[in-house]
Length: 459
Image (cartoon, rainbow, N blue to C red; front, side, top):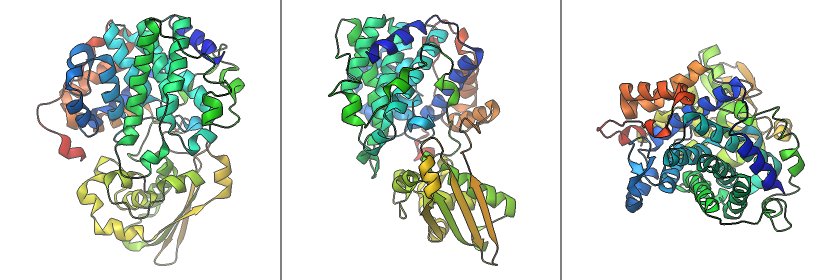
């Protein structure tokens, strides 16, 4: 059965020799996770979850990010996983339309700290969690993504594997953890088609569930091991013609690792906007464009980008992150779309709102046919003096075929982490993160937040 094959792979990952580039890629993912989680940790829903779960806090060996407050493993996974998916800066696995870092690393960290495992074993858990969940994601994509939020569904499997690794589960126990992860995985896309806090909760719940099923499996709780391929299983119920052979066909050969093919976000909004934003920013720089000399912006891209980010009149920060017209207007005016793009002042900016009326979105059938393996856009800008400028973005800055360098990733981390935990704290943590495989105990990895309130900076 499929969960047995995945479980055997996970257990073997504890000791198999891993290529240097795979361990390095895993550290990049962890650094990127902290970059997204540190600011997310001082915002709702994380702050509201903390208020809701007081009886689960101030005991246990897992910690919350960024406060380093003690928590049980499940509470830490839930809160940190939600925080990681809040500011829309967490990583993407393009082929599965999936954000693995938020649930997988949240579960891996909580379990690793609770079990006092080493940094190397923590990274191995992250690698296995990414590998298995991304393969399941590919198998059920794109049909699964029609109604389900992959980060909350597929992420549950990755979180279960990552937690199982730290808890020391054998292959049979890990298979049962995966089996129960499958029957507990749920997250509906309707939750992020309006202004709500549910979307980050999907990631947090996946992380928490992963920890729970791993803890339960260690005590002997069993699951239906045909949960993926069975006639009433995950594949049939939540996808169409799932390609399970493709999911595990070359798994044991270890010739490729998904963790080396991640997208690290370069913009603080929905990833479906990125190719268009890259095009707008490129034309702005090349031709010194301003709102005053732009007559019209036309973005042609794939259907899901239009479906999910086509909102022409976003009212809130959450809605604006899923509005291509809003993000494109901010990109032209300011040359980037970072956290400050979603402040109340920016949301109310009349110049942004007026420029949005000059932005047109169109479906490009060729780019639509290439989705999800390719996320591309054509951007055309007409100026008031009659000039036409065009830019084709075949991929997105940050995608595996156009990745952020280590230096760019470090700069992103500093930009997002330093305002929250201060320069001294952020730099000390960064040093630890680049040397994770040398840590003897993951409980020594604790970000220290400043006393001053920083919530306002990201509201």
